[in-house]
Image 1 (cartoon, one colour):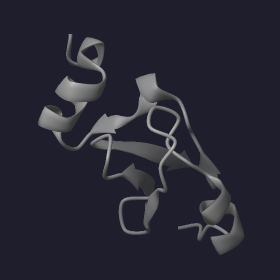
Image 2 (cartoon, rainbow, N blue to C red):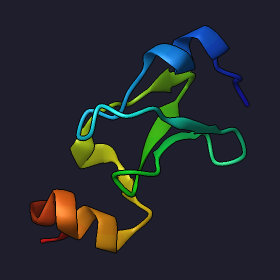
Image 3 (tube, rainbow, N blue to C red):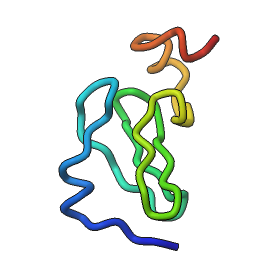
Length: 70
């Protein structure tokens, strides 16, 4: 399991909301609590694509980007 550099995490924001992300080391993802999305980290590289994100809160996504639920 790879640990991300804290400086990198501080500089990354959610591509949808432009808000701070929370690093979930156990699941290897960066979570946008505002957007209700979790961006995966694969081989130590954050995949910051909305289409690749896991939905963590469908209600938040429905408000911000309903097309992701289709």
